[in-house]
Amino acid sequence: MTIKRAFTNRRDSTALPLGRLPRRWSVLLAALCVAGLTLPALAQQAPAPDGAVMRDGVEGRDAALVPLDEALNGRLLWQDEAALGRLDRALASLAEDGLTPAHYRADTWRQAFAALPAEDAAARERLAQEASRALVQALDDLARGRVDPRRLDPRWEIPLAEASLPWPAIAAALAAGRVDEALTLARPEHPAYGQLRQALAEHRRLEALGGWAPLPPRSAALRPGERHEEVRRLRERLAAAGELGALVPEAGLYGELAARARPAGFDSLHYDEPLVAAVRRFQRRHGLNDDGVVGPRTRDALNVPVSRRIEQLRLGLERARWWLPTLAGHHILVNVAGQTLDYRRPNGETWRTRVIVGQPRRPTPLLASRVTHFDLHPSWTVPPTIFREDKLPQLRQDPLALEGRFSVLAPDGTPLDPEEVDWQNPGPVMLRQAPGPANPLGQMVLRFPNGHAVYLHDTPGRGLFGRDQRLISSGCIRVEGVRRLVEQLLADTGTRVDLAARLAGGESQTLHLARSVPLYLYYWTAYPAPGGEVIFHSDPYGRDARLAAALARG
Image (tube, rainbow, N blue to C red; front, top):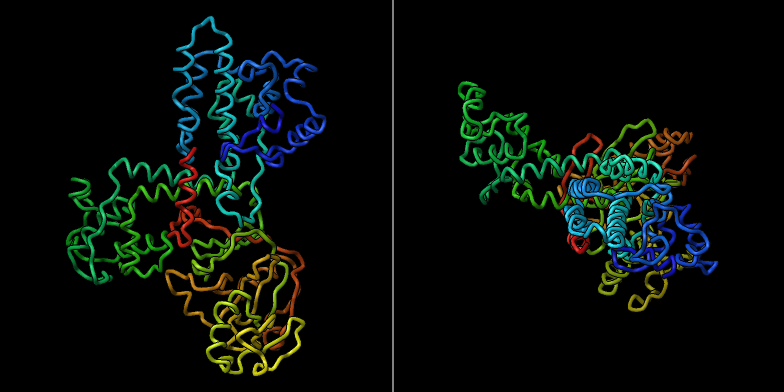
């Protein structure tokens, strides 16, 4: 077996590219492959140290275990039931990361070792190798994710975290019998990962307590100040989810202690201010307008079972492992699923706003880029998809549909007479709308290199930001308060521009930032917000089911 074949990717049982390995091992293994050496051949030239793990009885080290083996420097692992018991317990704890412990044979290693004859040293060595392989797989899954997102989405354009594991520290922890510490060393250190793990633990506790009962169907919205039998059910639902901090608990739920806590004259059927405040918090945590009105969308969110929230958190942790280790410092993050934008400033503060993203049939792409410049009072060149699917059918029905709003241009920018264009077969023409109040890009556009002709921009239709679901665009991102975002970018990058004066001048112009700013267009249905809580969203592009199925395959 060659070195490249020895590294298998459990995501689909195909060879793992050398580029996905820690850099120093990629270089070493690539050099060996060029030299035509296999692991057995290498072992004949340089005997393995005493602690080397045998690969199914063949002399030579399993390539997947080389980094760990080298870091252990001859120290032995898994030599007794106690050691394998610690491994069992550590692998079982992977459930706290949303992983499936059975994929690593958790809770089986000690028993398997005990079943082997004491005199069968070869069988025990093979078992030790298999146990180490399961651990290394777990470490790698924690560091960069179990599923390769590029196989779920061939258009994936976000760099993945490299598995740069601290092998010396991991080996020291294992040698001291601290397997759980070794797993901790592999987890992403980003605070958002810890938020998701904590939320997963909390929701599993809620599930163990029975979860929550759904609210019954109701055609009318429940509004603050009303008195209705459903208010009691609403209190019970929010209490079950741990929203008691701002609620008056009922005696039927919490016994005598709750009864003593109720103020005199408390009416459990009254939709009072403490309950309204709790509903508003719930709405904010579920990507809804926090108006306190329990309408259809709020009712739907309240009725999502705890099992679905647990699944969203598991998927959120997997998505976090893909790229959080690469995310640090100053950046813009658009959560397409949640239709929000977070701008993390150099001083650590985060500014958040609402955005409008692509409708499901024209989704906003997921990518990583850098904002380099912005245009003031921009014209709008109709993107190819909108031209082909929207504008051209209109023009074929009515050549006067341009109504003077658009100029027709040749590819080189030469103006064309719309009446001389054969709209049944127009060829490579473009439509362009001049700057002005009706221009869909508004007053400014933030540009970043990408292959999809998408950008962040203003809009004259600002009332649309008030919707709960803002899946309206053809892929670009409309930003609420985009001027405030640009002002912060100018200040944070040291770009000397008098934005107010430039806007007042009314001229179309392009201004470059002194330093580009990283931008990520990502997709999270369970999103760790800067304030420390997790926000849940719907799955508008239907990506959760595919990821859940891939994680379940093991």
